[in-house]
Image 1: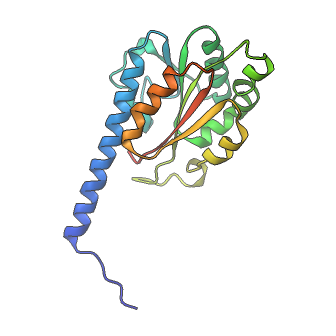
Image 2 (image 1 turned 135 degrees about the horizontal axis):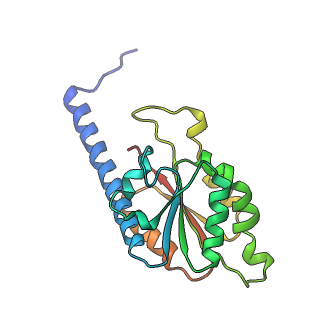
Length: 196
Protein backbone atom coordinates (compact mmCIF):
# COMPACT_ATOMS: atom_id res chain seq x y z
CA UNK A 1 0.00 0.00 0.00
CA UNK A 2 1.40 3.40 -0.99
CA UNK A 3 0.61 6.29 1.28
CA UNK A 4 1.43 9.72 -0.05
CA UNK A 5 2.62 12.00 2.73
CA UNK A 6 1.90 15.71 2.41
CA UNK A 7 4.81 17.98 1.69
CA UNK A 8 6.20 20.24 4.42
CA UNK A 9 4.68 23.24 2.70
CA UNK A 10 1.19 21.73 2.84
CA UNK A 11 1.57 20.79 6.50
CA UNK A 12 2.78 24.23 7.57
CA UNK A 13 -0.02 25.97 5.66
CA UNK A 14 -2.57 23.73 7.34
CA UNK A 15 -1.10 24.42 10.79
CA UNK A 16 -1.06 28.16 10.14
CA UNK A 17 -4.72 28.08 9.13
CA UNK A 18 -5.55 26.03 12.23
CA UNK A 19 -3.82 28.58 14.50
CA UNK A 20 -5.67 31.41 12.76
CA UNK A 21 -8.95 29.60 13.30
CA UNK A 22 -8.12 29.11 17.00
CA UNK A 23 -7.32 32.81 17.41
CA UNK A 24 -10.61 33.84 15.81
CA UNK A 25 -12.51 31.51 18.14
CA UNK A 26 -10.59 32.80 21.16
CA UNK A 27 -11.06 36.43 20.11
CA UNK A 28 -14.81 35.91 19.71
CA UNK A 29 -15.00 34.33 23.16
CA UNK A 30 -13.15 37.31 24.62
CA UNK A 31 -15.55 39.71 22.84
CA UNK A 32 -18.55 37.83 24.18
CA UNK A 33 -17.21 37.86 27.76
CA UNK A 34 -16.39 41.58 27.54
CA UNK A 35 -19.87 42.28 26.16
CA UNK A 36 -21.44 40.38 29.06
CA UNK A 37 -19.14 42.08 31.58
CA UNK A 38 -20.52 45.49 30.53
CA UNK A 39 -23.96 44.51 31.85
CA UNK A 40 -24.70 45.62 35.40
CA UNK A 41 -26.46 42.39 36.35
CA UNK A 42 -23.86 39.85 35.17
CA UNK A 43 -21.46 37.96 37.38
CA UNK A 44 -19.01 35.23 36.32
CA UNK A 45 -18.58 32.16 38.53
CA UNK A 46 -16.07 29.36 38.14
CA UNK A 47 -12.79 27.72 39.02
CA UNK A 48 -9.67 29.49 37.84
CA UNK A 49 -11.40 32.52 36.34
CA UNK A 50 -9.61 34.96 38.66
CA UNK A 51 -6.29 33.24 39.12
CA UNK A 52 -5.84 31.27 35.92
CA UNK A 53 -4.65 27.71 35.63
CA UNK A 54 -7.21 26.70 33.01
CA UNK A 55 -7.29 27.51 29.30
CA UNK A 56 -10.72 29.15 29.51
CA UNK A 57 -9.27 31.76 31.94
CA UNK A 58 -7.63 33.57 29.00
CA UNK A 59 -11.03 34.96 28.06
CA UNK A 60 -11.42 36.69 31.44
CA UNK A 61 -8.10 38.52 31.60
CA UNK A 62 -9.63 41.89 30.59
CA UNK A 63 -12.61 41.61 32.94
CA UNK A 64 -12.42 43.36 36.29
CA UNK A 65 -12.15 41.06 39.30
CA UNK A 66 -15.27 42.62 40.83
CA UNK A 67 -17.30 40.79 38.16
CA UNK A 68 -15.70 37.40 38.95
CA UNK A 69 -16.51 34.97 41.73
CA UNK A 70 -13.74 32.40 42.13
CA UNK A 71 -15.25 29.08 43.15
CA UNK A 72 -13.77 26.09 44.94
CA UNK A 73 -13.89 22.65 43.36
CA UNK A 74 -17.60 22.26 44.15
CA UNK A 75 -19.46 22.12 40.85
CA UNK A 76 -22.89 21.31 42.31
CA UNK A 77 -22.57 24.19 44.78
CA UNK A 78 -21.53 26.53 41.96
CA UNK A 79 -24.66 25.85 39.93
CA UNK A 80 -26.84 26.11 43.04
CA UNK A 81 -25.35 29.54 43.77
CA UNK A 82 -25.85 30.51 40.11
CA UNK A 83 -29.53 29.54 40.28
CA UNK A 84 -29.97 31.49 43.50
CA UNK A 85 -28.25 34.56 42.06
CA UNK A 86 -30.56 34.43 39.04
CA UNK A 87 -33.59 34.54 41.35
CA UNK A 88 -32.27 37.75 42.95
CA UNK A 89 -31.89 39.67 39.68
CA UNK A 90 -28.43 38.67 38.51
CA UNK A 91 -27.60 36.98 35.24
CA UNK A 92 -24.89 34.55 36.30
CA UNK A 93 -22.44 33.13 33.81
CA UNK A 94 -21.40 29.82 35.34
CA UNK A 95 -18.18 28.47 33.84
CA UNK A 96 -17.18 24.81 33.70
CA UNK A 97 -13.92 24.08 31.87
CA UNK A 98 -15.17 20.67 30.69
CA UNK A 99 -18.45 18.79 30.34
CA UNK A 100 -16.97 16.20 32.68
CA UNK A 101 -16.99 18.83 35.45
CA UNK A 102 -20.52 19.95 34.67
CA UNK A 103 -21.61 16.34 35.18
CA UNK A 104 -20.90 16.90 38.89
CA UNK A 105 -23.57 19.61 38.88
CA UNK A 106 -26.17 17.42 37.17
CA UNK A 107 -28.40 17.41 40.27
CA UNK A 108 -28.64 21.21 40.31
CA UNK A 109 -28.98 21.35 36.53
CA UNK A 110 -31.60 18.67 35.98
CA UNK A 111 -33.58 18.73 39.23
CA UNK A 112 -33.44 22.41 40.15
CA UNK A 113 -32.47 24.92 37.44
CA UNK A 114 -34.38 23.04 34.75
CA UNK A 115 -37.48 22.34 36.86
CA UNK A 116 -37.90 25.48 38.97
CA UNK A 117 -40.14 27.33 36.51
CA UNK A 118 -42.21 24.17 35.99
CA UNK A 119 -42.74 23.31 39.66
CA UNK A 120 -43.43 26.94 40.57
CA UNK A 121 -45.97 27.24 37.74
CA UNK A 122 -43.90 30.04 36.21
CA UNK A 123 -43.57 32.07 39.41
CA UNK A 124 -39.77 31.63 39.29
CA UNK A 125 -37.90 31.76 36.00
CA UNK A 126 -34.19 31.48 36.65
CA UNK A 127 -31.93 32.42 33.75
CA UNK A 128 -28.38 31.16 33.99
CA UNK A 129 -25.82 31.15 31.21
CA UNK A 130 -23.64 28.07 31.51
CA UNK A 131 -20.37 28.07 29.66
CA UNK A 132 -18.77 24.67 29.11
CA UNK A 133 -16.13 23.27 26.77
CA UNK A 134 -15.49 19.97 25.12
CA UNK A 135 -11.99 18.95 26.16
CA UNK A 136 -9.10 19.89 23.93
CA UNK A 137 -6.83 17.12 22.67
CA UNK A 138 -3.85 19.39 21.91
CA UNK A 139 -1.23 20.25 22.97
CA UNK A 140 -1.80 17.54 25.59
CA UNK A 141 -4.53 14.94 25.42
CA UNK A 142 -6.14 14.80 28.90
CA UNK A 143 -7.66 11.38 28.12
CA UNK A 144 -11.23 10.19 28.50
CA UNK A 145 -12.12 11.76 31.85
CA UNK A 146 -11.85 15.25 30.31
CA UNK A 147 -12.99 14.75 26.71
CA UNK A 148 -16.71 14.11 27.12
CA UNK A 149 -19.36 15.81 25.02
CA UNK A 150 -22.72 15.28 26.69
CA UNK A 151 -24.56 17.93 24.67
CA UNK A 152 -27.00 15.54 23.01
CA UNK A 153 -27.70 13.60 26.19
CA UNK A 154 -28.49 16.71 28.24
CA UNK A 155 -30.35 18.27 25.33
CA UNK A 156 -32.77 15.35 25.45
CA UNK A 157 -33.17 15.51 29.25
CA UNK A 158 -33.58 19.24 29.85
CA UNK A 159 -36.94 20.97 29.40
CA UNK A 160 -36.21 24.65 30.18
CA UNK A 161 -32.48 24.78 29.46
CA UNK A 162 -31.26 25.04 25.87
CA UNK A 163 -28.02 23.39 24.80
CA UNK A 164 -26.22 25.27 22.02
CA UNK A 165 -23.03 23.98 20.37
CA UNK A 166 -20.70 26.72 19.18
CA UNK A 167 -18.86 25.09 16.30
CA UNK A 168 -17.80 28.28 14.51
CA UNK A 169 -16.33 31.54 15.75
CA UNK A 170 -19.06 33.64 14.13
CA UNK A 171 -21.72 31.90 16.25
CA UNK A 172 -20.21 32.89 19.59
CA UNK A 173 -21.16 36.55 20.17
CA UNK A 174 -24.71 36.23 18.77
CA UNK A 175 -25.32 33.11 20.89
CA UNK A 176 -24.16 34.80 24.10
CA UNK A 177 -26.19 37.92 23.28
CA UNK A 178 -29.30 35.81 22.70
CA UNK A 179 -28.74 33.85 25.93
CA UNK A 180 -28.43 37.12 27.87
CA UNK A 181 -31.25 39.06 26.20
CA UNK A 182 -33.90 36.34 26.19
CA UNK A 183 -36.83 37.04 28.48
CA UNK A 184 -38.56 33.67 28.44
CA UNK A 185 -36.95 32.28 31.60
CA UNK A 186 -34.90 29.77 29.63
CA UNK A 187 -31.33 29.10 30.68
CA UNK A 188 -28.67 28.29 28.12
CA UNK A 189 -25.70 25.96 28.06
CA UNK A 190 -23.18 27.21 25.50
CA UNK A 191 -20.87 24.40 24.47
CA UNK A 192 -17.48 25.49 23.16
CA UNK A 193 -15.23 23.45 20.91
CA UNK A 194 -11.76 24.86 21.01
CA UNK A 195 -8.14 23.81 21.09
CA UNK A 196 -6.34 26.63 22.93
